[in-house]
Length: 159
Image (cartoon, rainbow, N blue to C red; front, side, top):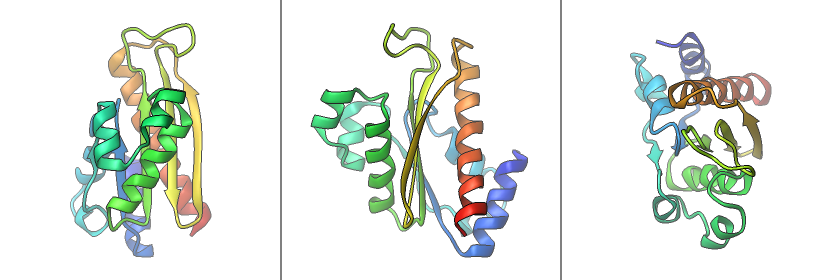
């Protein structure tokens, strides 16, 4: 169990807030980290694993134009994923992750690049992290840790 996930559970529960996740490259790891903790049903009802572009569009309402213009690994897509997850759930906070865990990538979107967004009633913020070509498992773990940290910081600052 992740100590930061435990702290997220404690803080969100105290504030009466629910969290949802829209995950691509992490494939449900954030949802799993949150639901590994007993009592997580108080803050977590559902998550979305939208690995394909079609799933991002169908489940989260990501626009085809956004995917065509920016590609799946982009802040605009991450923002639409988080906002869609918030709309499709009863959550107060939505975190999204889309990235290139590897192997592979390109000159423009290298392995280890991951885009994040967090949506709430306070708006949507997004950022890109380049973790480097650490290998698939390490990039996914880094993305999980970063996403949990974004939720944690949001809970401490916004509420």
